[in-house]
Image (tube, rainbow, N blue to C red):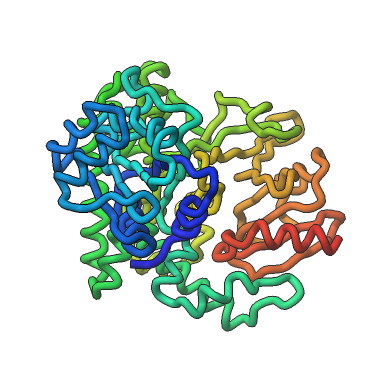
Length: 448
């Protein structure tokens, strides 16, 4: 399996002098358990996995909140030694053991030298329930997303992946290299970033097998909907799950999403899907200053789905279409917008759940909308996901007229470039270089 960027972040956590017990959060099947166990086996003398769903006997180990007694009981049941500084204790499906969550604060206070990580597929919903009191200030968080394009590329073509950090406005890639990355990008759009799909491909599975793996993942999510302990209506959860992949890139209107349903009930169902990280909201903001949340308008929002490969599967897009047609034009650009949102999340700070934003203007004289906003070194930058010439970026130009911003960003299939025609400065970044966006923006700013 390919290495993950979060492994680097886990190493920082491991060696931090102010380390706390860690909760790894993210949607089901994005590779949380695999990442933790492979990390534990690589960097510790031993890794003890306690899975509360599969091994109910471990629940009784947490009848006490004293770390010393907990460790003695786990060591006995697992027949392994627990040595602080040398052992990684992994509490999997931790939401099934409320006392284990409570105990994390005491590991921090009374046994800080022991490395403890918790994770769980339904953890997000459980943390909102009254009996799950989070030990605030005693636990760190890390968020895991599907494989980014860079991680995907590393698995298949590590030499090409090593070229990504070398991208520069001053020394653009040769056209042959650019086209090579675009071909790899098309493969990613077909497969997406779910680890099980990547593992199947690496084992030699053909395209039909990969489609089957994607279908299995989607069916797992569908089955999970009935297990969510929430006030949301199950039928409505199912409806939203199936409908949202067809609404990507569009502002959500409750009346169109489910005309016969009260907006209150619909909002509740969407909130549950977002809590379990199947969808991620993109909220409108005026972008008049930082933080972006200060001027957000929660009544205007869009959604990104978990993974572009799953979206492709749910929308029944044939692989041959993705291989041969202009990606920017597929589904009126919605699939590419999904990819960009997914990449922005994958490369966001690991320690918090990142919120995506967009900008829209509904004033007299014309409507304008910017797909995403990003903050780099304290500066808000607009991101327009669009093909065609930079001179036709009307919304991006309108944003630059109304805001104090040194340049705008266009994401497309065009090569990397920086242009200053017609009074508007535009950094044009190819889709495959979103991972390098902060560095590229800093380089351009330094050159102005």
